[in-house]
Image 1 (cartoon, one colour):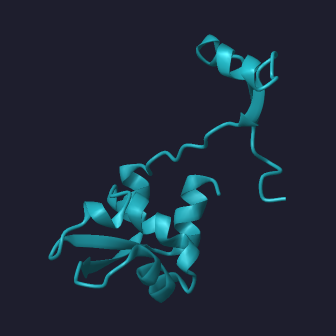
Image 2 (image 1 turned 60 degrees about the horizontal axis):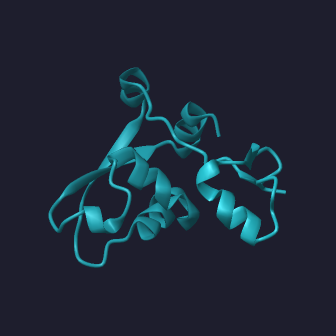
Length: 111
């Protein structure tokens, strides 16, 4: 039921018309709308405590999330907060910040 609240759209784009017809979907195809995360405001950012972390060999977002939040599935919060979507966007010696509390971050995002 994790997708129960997600919006669904009917894609009838002319760009895909031929592909739809080849697959027997003459009236388009329904799919979930891609969610997007907005960035928090400067005011919200100031209200968060954050932990400074210098990136080192072996670091992974999921490991940091497990250490700081007790749950590796929130790795994306660290990536999102630092505007570095993957570990490939972080180099050895870079400083990133881990926002706390997780509950406040999720509330700011409306999650």
